[in-house]
Structure formats: structure tokens, C-alpha cells
Image (tube, rainbow, N blue to C red; front, side, top):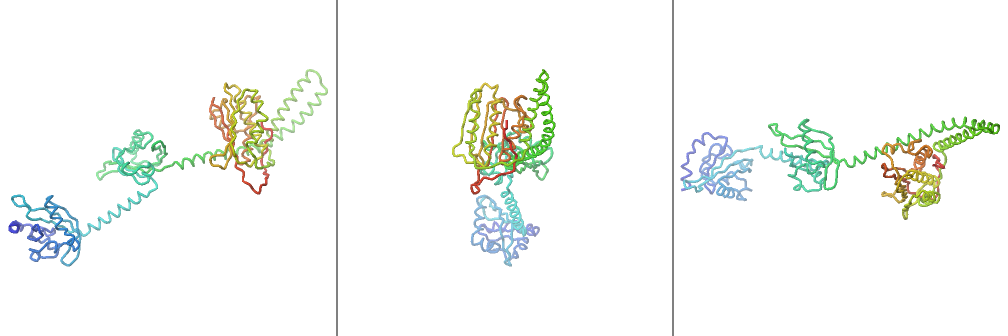
Amino acid sequence: MASRYLEDMPHNWILDSATHTAIVVTDLYGRISVFNQGAANLFGYTPEEAKGRHLPELTFSKEDQHARLFEQIVERVRSEGWAEERLFRQHKSGRVFPAISTITALRDSAGKPQGILEITQGVPNLFRLEDELKSSRNFLENILENSIDAVVTTDRKGHITYANRALKELIGLRGHQIIGKHISTYYKDGIDQAREIMNKLKQFGRIRDYEFDMRVGDKIIPIRTSNTLLYDDCGEIVGTMGVFQDITARKKLSDKLSATQAELIQAVKMRALGDLVTGVAHEINNPLMASDTFLHLLEREIESKLGKRIVLLKECNRKIEKIVKKLMEFSRHSEFEFTAMDVNDAVMSVLAITRQQLLNQGIELELRLGENVPRVLGDKNQVEQVLLNLISNARDAMEGSSQKVLAIQTDRSQKGQQVEIEVSDTGIGMTPEQIEQIFNPFFTTKDSDKGIGLGLSISYRIIDAHQGKIEVKSELNKGTTFTVSLPVYQAEGGRAYTNKEPEGNNVS
């Protein structure tokens, strides 16, 4: 009955017209009843040779025959009504080629499947093109996945559609935890930041080297990004792609470079000024000595009211002489004697001199000396002069304060290669503008009768000669902290050595 149903089908018109498409009709067991000219051209059998024979035996590869692929296709067609297959088919000569087949169930008037209709086209380049496409896709995915920069794509509304490995590592989440989330979730400024970036993209099509902050949990990460819009074949915007670079290390390096440049400028300025004041000091000393001689002679000859004025002139000369001495100390190059020294001993030596003055002025002393602090390489007398100057400045800064606390602390730095001495006060503090100039010669925040502004300049040169640093932090009306950092002593046979560097005695 099934064979008669299939044989009575009006298929002559198909045989006459479809010469480039194989059309085959079989019963549910694969026995061929219709085999058009297109099938003959594709598989190499004439319609007469094929009719009545088993389709899998003629056109399926040996592997697919052993796997009973035809029977599986028939079952799928029985249940679903049709199937589409991409598989290798076999020519009469034994040649195997790729093909696409659409298989449809043929039913009787009662709707019961009686056979199948297969329409097949050979596509010799299909699998090669698919392999090339797959290879290209894998190559691109490999590049994206192994990029050191984070790559992310979003749809038009900003929802993440792709995130490479670098972005997952940056955020600390897996892919399925990221895909679908809105990109603004990871922006510090949220949706406002996302809108700003999108507006720039719509205006320019792409943006380069745009910097913003990402928020990952409680952590803020500085990011430099380049973004572009993504379009479909019709030129409509379908999303965005961004490449993110974590510039945390670059920011730190830039800040460190800026600080180093500032230190270099300060050092060069100090050295140039040192050379200048040496000449100025010598020029002042010569007429000063002559003036002192003449004033001494006049003082012996005159005892009237004019004599008192001469005394005042001599006092003025003494002040000029003191300034010249400071300038000479600032610019003089003499030998430092560097030995292994204990900074705690230096602090206690200075406090032995200044403690009573602090008590007399109602200043409370908080002393926190670190235990087992390593020795440093330094000139003890010069370091003590720096500490004397810092304590003196702190005392003057707290003169009008209601709460007077001087805190001195010593400890090893976190990196372990430096020993730090902190001198903090609760005085009037300084503005940012004052902090920038604090180590400049002749700059002072004190009244003119309390200093001429050379103490910190000389202190800076002393610590610089020790290959250390002196830094300041201060806020107006919130006090000031000076931090002196000195390198840890590295024994060289236990011997001290000398170095031709500036001397700064009697700093005040």
C-alpha cells in the first residue's frame, strides 16, 4: 500500500525541472521510489539504477551507515515532521562530499507517515568555510581572552554582553556573574558616568584615553579607557565596546615622579643658593669689619648721648654678623663624621637641653621611642641640631594655643630601610602655600624677632647630606608634623667614614 501510494505521486514535473537539486522519495525503510535527474547528477547513479535500492547504502558514508544515521533521521521526522541535516554524502565513485538535506514526512489522507521526501544540495565549500569561520572566531577569541587589557561589550542600553578574562580578574567575578549587568554597576559615579561616556560616543563615534574611576566593592580603581560604538549591517547602533586599562601603578609612578622632581628642584635650588650666599657673605664681612673698627674708636672718644647711639650701631652690627654666620653655615662645605648612631640617644640628648623650657611654657611632652630601633648612619651632633630646630619651631608654633602638646616618636619605617623621627605639635599649622615654601631660605611664619627663616633650610641640607629626607604635613589650626627619615646603618667593617658635605652648627 505504501509503495503504491508513493509510486502514484505526480513527480514527473520535478524530474524535468530540478536538475541541480537532488529530490529523492523513499519509504520509511529507505527504499527509493523517486530519484530525479538532480539526484543522479549529485550521487552518480541513474534513476533506473537507484530505484528500488536502499538510500543509505547508495549515498551515506560507511560511518553513518554503521551509526544507523538514516534510522535516527526517520525517527526525528516521524515525531517532528521534518529535519535538516548537514553531513557528508557519498558519490557512486566513492568520493565523499558535504551536503545539506531537508527531509520531510509524506503522509496519507489519514495523516499517517508513509515515507519521506529528501531535498539535497551539494555544498563543496560549506564545511571549509565553516571551518575557516570557526578558526577565525577562535583566533579572535584567543586574542581577546589573553589580552592584558580588559575588554567589554554592551548592548544599546548598557548591559554587558561580553567580558574577557582580564575584566573578570579586574572585577573579581566569573563571566556568568557579569554578563547582563549594567556597565554603570562598576562605575564610581554610576549611571551619570555611563551617560557621559555614551554622549561622547554619540558625538564623536569613539573616544580615546578617557580616564575615570571604577568601583569594585569598597575599592576604587583608576581606569583609562578607549571606547567605540558597534553598528549592525544597516548602520544602526547595537552597542559599545570598551578597552579598560588599570592605571593604578601608573598613577603611583606619576605621583612618585612628581615628588622626585620636586625634591630635585629643591636640591638644585638649595645648591645654587648656597653658592650665591657664600659670595654675599664675604662681601658683607669686609665692610662690617671696617665698621666695627671705626665704631670701637669712636666709642672710646665719645661718652655723650652720641655714644649710646654708637652702642646701638654696634648691636646692629652684631645682628648682621649673626646673619652672615648663618649664611656661611648654610653654604659652607665641611667634613661630616658619619658613624653608627642611635636616634633615641639623639632625642634624649636634645630633650635634656629643652625639657625645662617646654615645662616653663606649659607644653606637655608625649615621648614614644621605638624599641629595638636599628642604628642609622649619621653625624650625631648635626642630627641633634636638626631636632633642636624642629622642637624650637614647634614651641613657637604653640605659643598661642590653648592645648600645647609636643609629640616625638621614633620607629623603623614600614619598608624597613629607614628610621623615622616624627616631631608633632598642636600649634597654628600652615597653609598649603606656606608648606611649599617652608624649606626655602629666609622664609618664615614667625615674627621677625624670632627667626630669620634659615633654620629649616639648614636642617634640609643636613638631612640631605645624610641621604635622608625631611617631610612636613600640616593643616591650618590643626598642628604640624615633621618626619625625618635616615637610612639604616650598613656595617662596613665597623668603621666610620667622612664625607665632604655642608655643616650646619648652632641651628636656631
